Length: 94
Image (cartoon, rainbow, N blue to C red; front, side):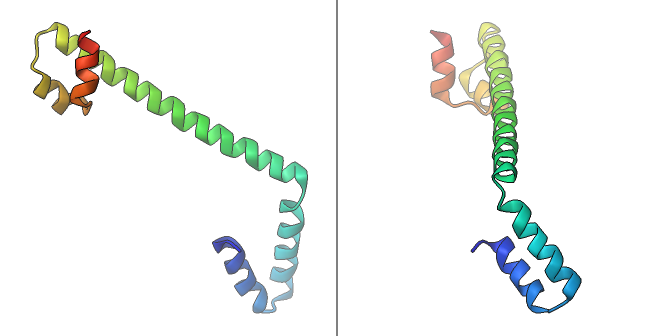
C-alpha cells in the first residue's frame, strides 16, 4: 500500500460518511483500465517533456562549448560556464 492509500485509509477510519463515499468512488475510478491507461499516458507525457527539456539544455550547452572552443577559450573556462565534463569538451574538439 502506497503513501496515498495509507492516508486515504486514515481518513476513511474517521467514519465521516461523505469522505468514505468519496474515497470509495476514488478507488472505483482508479481501478478502471481506462483510468490506468490515461495515467500511464500522462506519466509518459511528463517523462517525454522532461527528456525533451534535458536534451534542449544539453544541446544548448554543447553549442556554447563549440563556440567557446572556436574562440580559443581554455577548457577549464568552458567547464565552468557550461557544466560539461572535460571528456564532453574533448570529444567536441575532434
